Amino acid sequence: MEVASYFDEGIEIAKKYGPNLILALAMLVGGLWVIKRVSATFAHVLKTRNVDTSLRPFFSSMLDVAMKIFLLLVVAGKLGFETTSFIAIFSALAFAIGLALQGSLGNFASGILILLFRPYKVGDQITVVEKSGRVDEIQIFNTILMTPAGKRIIIPNGKMSEGPIENIHLGDEVRSDVKIDVKDDTSINLLRAVVGEVVNKCPFRVAGKDAFVEIEGFPRDAMTVTIGCWTVGEKYSDTFYYLNEELKKAFDAVGIVLAKEGLEE
Image 1 (cartoon, rainbow, N blue to C red):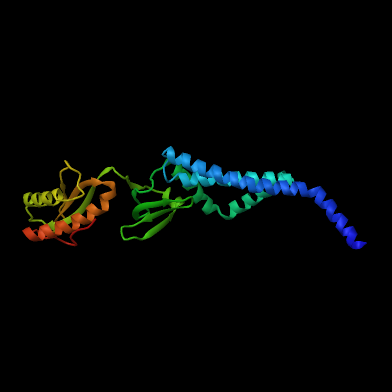
Image 2 (cartoon, rainbow, N blue to C red; image 1 turned 135 degrees about the horizontal axis):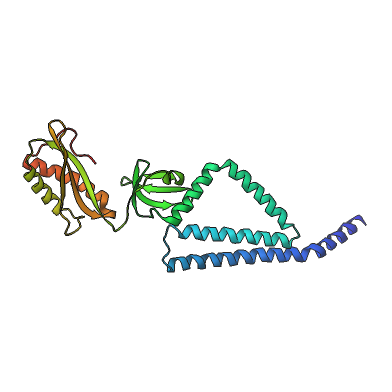
């Protein structure tokens, strides 16, 4: 009798909650499938509209998370849960987490501003907080730089928005400079001629742009000279290293003597 009673109660519960449970599960599975399709379509639209590669993952993930939260609220309501309670609990948790993660939220806010206003984008050569590198990835909390030596520099986005950023855009024409100290009795005409030959042979040089050679000052027993070669943004570092090596070779060949520490950036 007792077993039969439990069985009857189980049947009653199944009749009462079973249809809603099955429907809720169907809504959850179907909703997740629809969300996956919508997210894929949205990502494709962003790509066809030539939206910046830095923005696509952010917008896609935000849409995906928003749709999943909405789906969970709908499913919970179908199961008979009071959705207003869920919203209140979620708000309280968000407030508590916000207090505990103020720094991370600051980085999050900075990440959104970077993605919206785009002071730099993936591929740009930037210098910020005394760190230089090519922008490899812009995440919500961090920006990742890649150095010519293959090192990954991870900088919180909050730091990226605190001070000035030196940015060299891909494709933009920029002058790559090296600063040298030579002996103060060096012939300026000879120096300009040698530098001109080196710059004209540079494989990364922008055609039609002459070498930049200017005297900055006269420290003790020396003459400080800035030498520049115009190039494009993606070849900035290559041009800098080329100038350092080839200028040293050319100076040695004609007898121009470096003073103090020689070549430096």
